[in-house]
Length: 290
Image (cartoon, rainbow, N blue to C red; front, side, top):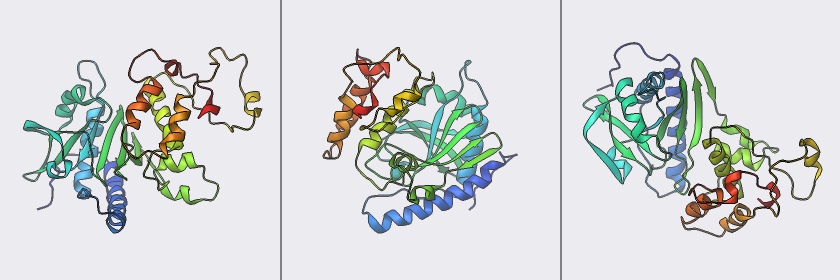
């Protein structure tokens, strides 16, 4: 029985839902041909549209003065693995999502959404997502990001599209196939084909950590064999670090040989996410060390 959606909908949701469904379904078939890992069921177009619509309307609300921020993963509890189940599934309404958002705002925590009795409900929370999971993140009022899980070894989700009000921005994964595409761009697009952490992933994780401060900033990547980049910087550098901080650079060099998951804890310590005194928290790393 098809999913029935009552009432008016967020108009761009239908456009993105069809595109995201086709994109994720195509990727799922590619994964199934090359990997024996478990992949998630592909969310239907109607389900993706309904979740985008509810997420957009929830993003415009306020809960005790706070802007709702949450990540919605469309997957069944059976596909999710380790979960935290709600005693009573919550209806997928803007009001219920806004009230739930303060409890699920932490990075890496997703609200599981699935079809129950021909209606979508939030059934619990999940941290580990299977391959090909469709995720809709509420980033800011009226700003949504549609993502999916590409590979099992990385926590990073690949962006499919960005919706801001009535504007739609689709991420073109074909851009990474051009000869002059930098490795960093390929990694951000999720099309670098790597399954292990490498130096590019360290840079991406560092940029995400900087963004989490919410105060702006830029990550400048420069060649290690030239000083010409300094000519484009306003001098003097008020917070330069010397000798340069090398922890992240060491981790990037070691990551290609590591196959365990301990690099996540090492990276958090290296960039100061463990809240202990650490020079990396100043974000004044000489980038040649990475």
